[in-house]
Length: 137
Image 1 (tube, helix red, strand yellow):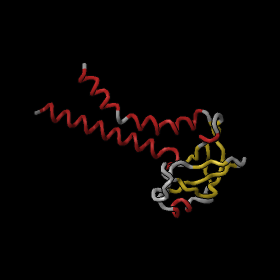
Image 2 (cartoon, rainbow, N blue to C red):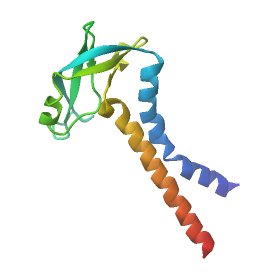
Image 3 (cartoon, one colour):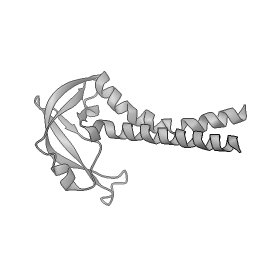
Image 4 (cartoon, rainbow, N blue to C red):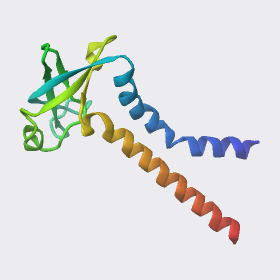
């Protein structure tokens, strides 16, 4: 029984990032209104400690209704973010909490969820291959 519990915990670890990063795209569709917007500027994302060493730049979009939505996934170089200024995008404005509104671009909404799914799949395949190798010897 103990071995089963340990294996269950071990194999559920890769699902933790998927839970956190997968919520973002799901809730964007669940309780939001989709609107057209334009990226108007970039804002700086600092580390939790407030250090400027680990900062990154994320886009800020303004919808046709005047709603401002800040991106949560940043680029290391400011020029990478500035290239998107003026681009038309869509935004999901949250009906419950406007601070949880999202910019509908690949990096802002989907990248972390897809990355965590990919890492989880690689982890499970590697564990399965290791199990098969151990079982055959």
